[in-house]
Image 1 (spheres, rainbow, N blue to C red):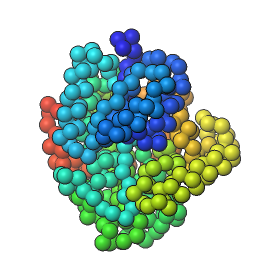
Image 2 (image 1 turned 45 degrees about the vertical axis):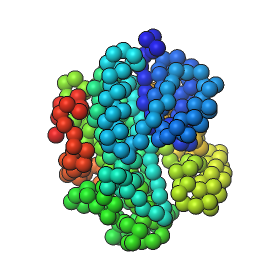
Image 3 (image 1 turned 90 degrees about the vertical axis):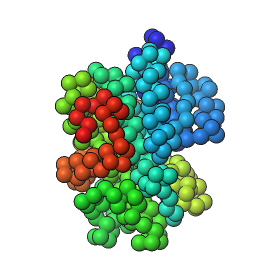
Image 4 (image 1 turned 180 degrees about the vertical axis):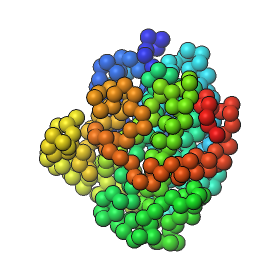
Length: 360
């Protein structure tokens, strides 16, 4: 392991997208020979299933347990990993891929600390994990990769397709405080008993996640020791998988796997080759994509350099393999700074928890 260039950490590794990224990573012989994978899952059952599926992948990796909704567990995990990296047991993190997420359509649940489950999964836990591991990253070319979704933008096609944001009362997600989103009092099941309430909360969590990109990058750029680290977002598109497994059999199996797989395949036939932008013809980034394509796009954001990404893709947001703007709310500096301050309060971060100089 001492000959490796670095390591990368992937949350939500057992999910369909996580597994797709690992597959594409393992297929790239240069990457597979150069980097050590650190894959996190929530429980022993998931760890065993992932381990069995990776037996023939032929690269250096380990599978660790981490529940990203438990702040105390994140602290323990980050401190242990940081100690191993500092001791030279494993190489510094070349990339930190924030992939884990949680969608509940008809129920609403909270963490033990009282945070909305979608918010804790997609944003809060990842924020704390990132802040605590910045000092463990490759300081010359490290990347924090935020796996976003178009649902963070109320003006995206989700307004028409699912109707979540069709009503003008839901067009603005973030107001004067993060508390309604963090505590799950925005778009509750009592407000709307349909699946749309849960999907809006999922969108709100994704918005907070994307809002982290410009604010964290701004603070990193001011840091003399960490300023070469990039924060980049990538939207993998809608993909076949189990993210909607809490929506019942029809949503989970029939739509989530069967229908989505057919759509992804058909749309891929009409898309241009991966790596070609929409300026050259039909975009390769259809709304519904195969996990293979999305895995390739995530791998590029994680490790690769090209004319679009450059050596350090600072503050970029990608739709697949195309650079696109984040939503208007995600670019609002007042909102991103409010979110940051509120997150400090939620996590109780202290100066000895992070290597980031301008963390307050």
